[in-house]
Image (cartoon, rainbow over all chains, first blue to last red):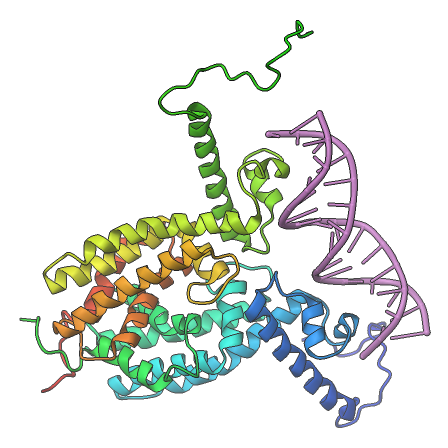
Length: 223
Length: 223
DNA sequence: CCTACCGATCGGTAGG
DNA sequence: CCTACCGATCGGTAGG
């Protein structure tokens, strides 16, 4: 707010004139791509060996460089796993913003289940690290504030979608808190067992939806 | 101080003659109890810090002894986590053997869900280690052949119960393989978020059952 | 992006 | 059940 006339503001050395796009644009593109590759390699290492079990030497070896070189791109192992986490979260968050806008209750629930399962199976490595080694609901020092916020808003959006489905009558009249957890478990658990060579994501989604919606149910219920 | 020149017996004083049950019965009881405490402490450590992140020093410290002393009871860290795993599995396996015998389809499914959730929440530490740090479906060198067998037969019994529920019409006519995974996810996921101070296992079980059975559902389905 | 190296910590052992 | 200690490995730094 206040910065009209500053006399002694000599913090960061400016070093550059005001131009449209100031800094090292060329290097930045390569830099970001390298960084992306490092995060990708880290996700695979952490998925296979866990966060503590997987070393930065493992990550470096996967890229055929030395460990010390990683520190040109990251500041710590915790930051690296945070980036893995963000990668998994960012895409998922975009999905759910679109899902909330769907009007038909059944279509919306279907979209929720399909996208959750789809995200998880298309990114098994990232979600594995996410769920098992950082902690979804647990506290973790590896989580930055930004990450915590991403996660909170995601769960909230998920929860509201479930709540609406109950209010609209496409799901039974149950406790929405537990229903949210149950449906999350049903869909997220996928990362524990899914194998692209042996399983089919669409068929799994369909099964989950039929279990939730009761479609095809033949007997056993009465008013 | 000085041993009065006893030529023959210089080992530990046996102190008892041959009786019906030959060896160290008294010590064995203490020994087994100590071992149980070690496994319990290990479960808590591994739950909080993970298998790789939690050290044997942590386990020893929780019991107020030195790390080296643990090796009187266990041979390796892998064996220790295997014992944690067995503890979680043994009880669960007993449950499911009884559940299979239930005749009423709805009662059987209800028992399956209730016992799975009940086991998990009554033993969050053990299941946490089990699911995240040894791997439920993954391969793991920490698993002994006995463990692998325990696990396989458990999943199989679980799977058959789901399959029967589908055949009997209490669940929709879906792929039983995926339905098994879905219901396992729905129930097992509990270890990720359940807090005894804030949540109620019975209410959660009821929610899961209603979601699966469709009880209370009002609209959205038509022949 | 490298070589070289650090202090800390780990699982495990020796020997009592 | 202990003290003392090992070789290996870790995350991270120095300095180029």
